[in-house]
Length: 608
Image (cartoon, rainbow, N blue to C red; front, side):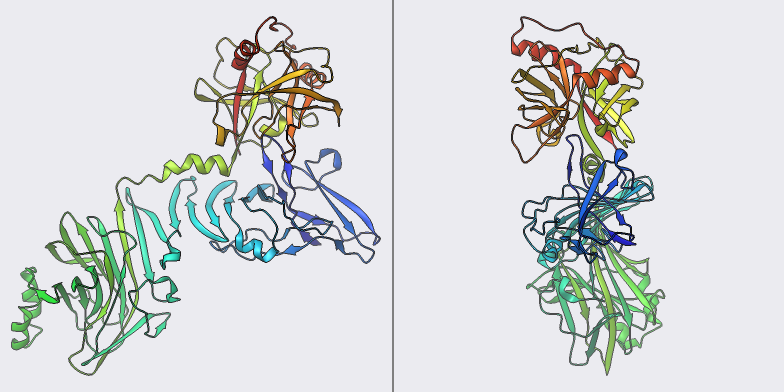
């Protein structure tokens, strides 16, 4: 089998989609010929009469597909999973894609949506350049549940949202500061609050660590290798991408590799002034807490029980010196393996932890927002340590990730269209492609969304009937139908909800004329038509329905199409509904006519 993924563009006013997953048989008759393969709404191969999309291609005399360029994307920049296995980016003429705009790419597996990509990219460059310049929105699904949502710009992720099995946000990865030298910033939930976190990871490339000077020391998968002696020490700082303050946490991971000296991290520093805090440990089990002001150490009122802990582990002379310094002892310090040092700023206090156990608590302030790594001089020989990472996190009380939910949902799995009343019992007529494959259907009435059910549809004519499930539309007044067809050049108008994201959910009116009575079995109209107009009633100047709008051509101005009233009436009768013929409005101004009829036209929203 030869696998291809098609890039098809089908403009439907309620939904704009591109469906991809193309599998071609190998038993061709190898001659110069044109072939077509047909697919349903989910990308499955079907017979032509059941098709929603079609792929047309040309086979050369030697069996090659002419004009198609194929590119395989192994991984996206933000996930190990496949975005698109193969995509086709040129047409059979071999021309470039100067005007190509990939509005939506949808990939299905076993009938379920697995990947969706909404792109703002236009053509005019090579395939490799396109990949580097991809901008848009990406969605990853598992069993039709959203798992990952991401915003891309120029081929790189800007933000990545991850969801649990209940489709609730569990973490957000923010890449907006990468150009300033920072790796991703992560928002994650901790207990009932959210945290904003940044980690400087020293086990990989150092290009994402914005130190105040070059990191010119050896590195490995164990971290940066600090080596100090009686004559040398080491320290380096970087500015935290978030301010340090109440409810901030600073954490470092380190591993001793021989010798004895203090290694750890600096925090709350004011770079260039010598004002900072230092928290270090050594391989003998001692810890050091220092507050430096203008380069001088300030005596700290550490806990009294630390003196008992260090007294029996020092020579008397060393003990007397330790009384002047911020030294303590903890049996939590590991001589081998990774140690985790952390500091939490809370309510004007600084709380010190070693491997999760609190060792000191001081009431004091900090100087600035710089953090870093440090290794002190050793009294003898050399001492070595690997520092794996330094991280900063802030607890966020006011952060609400779910305010993003509506925007994400509206672009990830929803569409909109228009419908209108056809009987007093609340039946609403719209296009089938608006509600096709919908998980939920809603109509907007009195500023509230009312859930609806699908009553019936005609896929061939692109018509469907829906009805609110547990809601009665008050004073429901159906629009009347006109039995005889309109005349060429007759004036008409359209009521609907085009481009609701940009223009809102207030009804819009456009007018025009009947441009053609038969364009592929549809009326062609000059009334401007936009996405969201699908299902809009086409009305004459007496407020009678003469058709249902279902398509437009985005590259042509003032060209729209409507299903004829005859086809609509045939569908309504077949569904057992009496076609409304009363309530046409005569002797009304155009403004009065619009006011009377707009109450029977509804905004429709569907979720997939």
